[in-house]
Every structure is written in structure tokens, then in C-alpha cells.
Length: 425
Ligand code: GLU
Image (cartoon, rainbow, N blue to C red):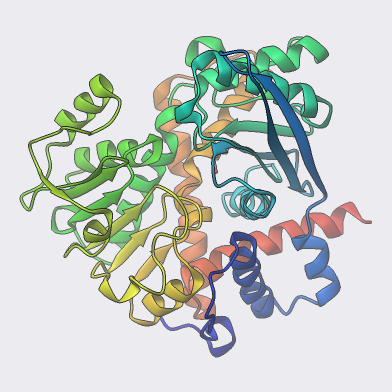
């Protein structure tokens, strides 16, 4: 695949890009292909509403801390806005803006009836007790409850938050608005959550990796993989890929990278993770750095941790031929161009990690119907939605001679634009 000239003007940037600038760049590239006029672009790219709130909280030792929380509601042309809530020390308005916009394109590319939003609190959750996290979450919801809800904007887990956080949110929101579990997704299964939600993002990466290889005529057994990140996305991707007979040579987490040239014992590593909370001290593999993991001689890389891990400084060391973006924004646009031009096939985040929000949608549907699906139904529907989206993106990339990222953005922008036209002004 070679991009048409306008779709892949090389990106010359000698400074780090802010996350929202990167998303804007991908958006513009696709909008150029669609010949979208500037007044429409502005309407589609600008967020509808951005909330910045103060989150005052009492710590366990009696100190008062004042944190900053955000909820950016990017677009609701196709339905209620949808997107996770991130607790991380890098969270700021620009990052939340970028991620909210990615959610709009993500829900559109997999064609589920939502818009996009994202929230976050700038905090290091590892330094907080469970009680402090609960108080912070409840205070944050006190500030934004008025702007969220099952028909308006439905939060979900993201980095630093989990099913338990979602239960606190549901409980706090319902204090104001009454019983309605569809106000939040990613809840524990015993608290109106969906079976298969927790595994969904990682499983989705695996399903799509499988589809991609099949299209290109390769077998999983010949595709050696390195996965960066062993959190919710990376660990479930590893589990699914291992079961599908992909050799997984390396994984990493906060404690570093773990490598075995004959393939890692993933079930053993998953039990280790469950028991110890991280891979720290796991001794059945060689220890490598995160940078070494990215540069390994493997066929496929699955960056599933933070953003911007492959950039101008390390892009030349990448040997993988396929990249599945489990994380949001893991590639700097310069690296994205460079790798694409060197024939690397990159499955973009807005498709690659859309499994999570897809099963969030199933959870919301089940909550609204007071009915519960079994795991098989969830998995089958997930596969159906992701496979359909993959085929559409693949087709578009062939027809227009553009990258999979540009193709995915084109499909998404077309859908959001059409909904906007139908809704009128
Ligand atoms: N935080 C996830 C994402 O970035 C899931 C969002 C959701 O389920 O609404 O896609």
C-alpha cells in the first residue's frame, strides 16, 4: 500500500507534538482526502464542552489536597458521548482533549451509536490509598454529575481506574439522579457490569491482529510478538494471542521487560501478575529494557501502555513489520510516517483498541434492557463488530491508496459529518 501524495505528506516537525496536535494532524489528513471545507472541519474538531473542575479532598493523614479534574465532551452528533476516565500524573486539558476526540472517531469507526468524551484527574493513583481514591472519585462526580448521564455522556475505565472506581461513580451519580446503572460502564460483573468487558480491549487487539495477518496471508505461528504493557490491555491481548498460537517473545510492565527467544509462558506470567500485582521478580525470562523490547527482532509490536513511545529518536530501530496500537496515540506522527513509508502496517488506535468501548456499548444496552448476555454472546458480537470495521477500513485504504489510519479517520469523519448534516444546525 502506498499513500496518495496528499494523504501522506511527510510530517516535518522538530519539536515534540502535544497529543491534541497529533490527533488534529491525522484528522486533517483524512479531511484533505474527503475534501472537507474548513468550516465543517472546525465544527467537527472543536469540543462541544470542556469542564475543568476543582477536586478538594481530605487525605488519610488529615491534610487537604486540591486536585484538578477534567471532562471534555467532544461530539454527540451520533449519540451520547462516551469515553474513559484516566487517573495519571500526565493528565492535562490538552491530553484529555485529544483522547476525547479520538473517542469520537473510535465510536464512529466501529459504528456504535455514540459520540466521544474523555475525563481525567492529574494524580498518581499508586501513591493513594483505596479510601483516598474513593473520596477523590466521589468528589469529582459531585462536580460533574450534572453534565453526565446515560443519555448524555457515559464514563468508563481508562488508565489508573478500574471496575471498582466505576461502582463508586455509579453510586455517587445515583445519589443525585436515582437508580440507573447505564450511567457508567466497565462496572464489576456483579454490579450490573457486562461479562467480557474487562478482557475486551486486549481481546479486540488480538482479534484484529488475527484478521490483519489473515489478510496478508501469514500464519499466527510465524508471527513473533512483543507486547509493551501488561496492564488491562496488554495482559488480555497476551492471553488471547497466546491461545491463538502466536509466539509471544516479550512483554513489559512498570518493572521492565521480560524476554524469551523461544516464547514466554504467558499463562504462568498471568498467574504471577495476579499473585504479585506486577511482574517484578519474575525470573523465568531474560530482563530487558523497554527500549530493547521495542527494537526486538519480531514480526509484530503491540504498544499497549502510554502514548508517544515510538518517536523520532527510536523509530529507526523498529524491526517489526506490523504494529497494533493497543494504547491511545503510542506513535508520534513523525514515526508513524517513517514506519508507514518503510512498509510497516500500522493498525491505528481508533480501531485497534476499540474492543473496550464496544463491550461498554453492550453493557449499556444490557443495563437499559435489564437483561444480561452470556460471555459467548458478548465475544461473538465483539468479533462481528470489529471484523466489520476492519473490512471497511481495509477496503477504504485499498480504494483510496491511503494508510489504515487515514482510512479509519476517513470512515469516522464521514459518519460524524453525515450525522451532523442530518441533525441540522
Ligand atoms: N477507555 C477506553 C478507551 O479509550 C474505553 C472507553 C469506554 O468504554 O467508554 O477506549
